[in-house]
Image (spheres, rainbow, N blue to C red):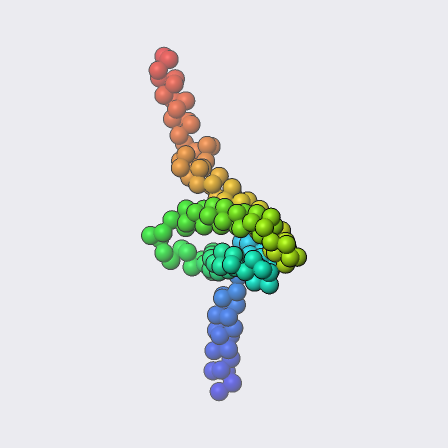
Length: 169
């Protein structure tokens, strides 16, 4: 009976490990940005919840949940199961809207409210805005390369050279 139980224990451990983000993804640029977004939006959420600017607590919380979902989806390759969505475009729109909204509420929190927690929430909101802005900058570059047709070292420049030779001769 001990031999029968051992493989089941190994299988259950493997499924638990698969739920955790892979080390390869977490150490990548996208993984680090998503991890930074999760951590900083959670800190912003806690600071806004403790401040007199608690009316703004919803935005960092929603961004925290969205970044946490995408961290989970990208690290476990959940996004590859749903081919109908263009994940980079959805991620780009999430980052653009998050950076704009967090920048605005951070400006209001720093300028209008006088307590220390509101000031801290605003400062952490600005730092979170930087993470989201960096993420949408990198996603924008990837989407621009995708729309251009990929890498410039591929076959299309060679065919253009062939076309220019045939036109001149």
